[in-house]
Image (tube, rainbow, N blue to C red; front, side):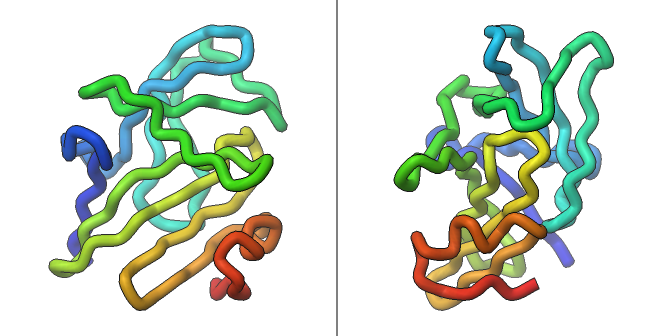
Length: 132
């Protein structure tokens, strides 16, 4: 299945060598690169060992190309928003900015899919139950 992930602002490609790459900043103001797997619902991440992220900490995600903050706020929840192209269809991908929280949402013109054990916390924003 061919997927591309890109910035919703500059449309720059974020998908490199089987990873989605972000510039990030933790609550202490430290910055680092974080690479995520493109497999929706898989929460493994790569980062430099010196870049510390604490469980439950809010992490800001930025496009590494245009440096725009990718945050979307829904009530008191903060999500990262990127775009995904799959088999000619465009989707919005949202995931939690809280370290350790497992919730990802894929929203298309006619579809909504939720992934992760914490996904139900956000479903009221879209009025649907997650499908795993």
